[in-house]
Amino acid sequence: MQGQLKKLEQYWSNRAEGYSMVNQEELAGEQRAKWLHYLKTHLPDRSPEEVTVLDMGTGPGFFAIILAEAGYQVTAVDYTKEMLKQARKNAGILADSITWMTMDAQHLTFQDNLFDVIVTRNLTWNLDEPDRAYREWHRVLKPGGTLLNFDANWYAYLFDEEKRRLYEEDRANVARLNLEDQYTCTDIDTMEILAQNMPLSNISRPCWDKEILSKLGFSSILIEEDMGNQVYSFMERINNAATPLFCVQAYK
Image: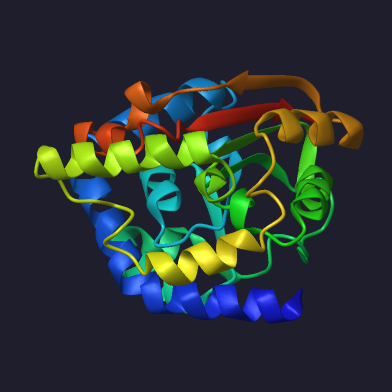
């Protein structure tokens, strides 16, 4: 597993600058307001300054930045130092108001019952031990705390012919509309090799997530199956039509 983790770290380190550009586009586009509205309607109904938020796998910092700007107390962690470097750069004048930490989401060093909220996006699918990660996230949440996990079955098409057909249909639609292809503009070959070895790539989600979270003691687990229309731009909706974004919301 350590070998796989090192390969992932290398991949995301190499992608940090390019992925940062994606976050910069989100921060400058319609996604900024859409995501903030969605998050705020699911966060505790208290003054933001009283709410501690852990952004798990922050990447280039999108969630951390928009939540810090809204006044929340934000701690942002990522396993890849180069991602955190890009995140600090993207945060600009907000950088010093966010606590940045290099950490493995599956082996946290935080004390128990520390955060009111955990937010995470596009992370769980590429974890070696996602069940352990969920257990850690439960541990560091305060009683009554909220988990918001946004993810998708990104590489299910590697294991399912019908999903492969729909994935290729998305690629054709992106080309037909002359849009940026968010899959093929990355090192797709390397990512597919890594994804084939990820435990969640060939598992039906979010059913799996709900089952694991229930076993860990989370309560009121709510699933939103397809929320792209709420937070995506037009380009993202076309790119990911066959791979809907879901939200897993759970309370400790």
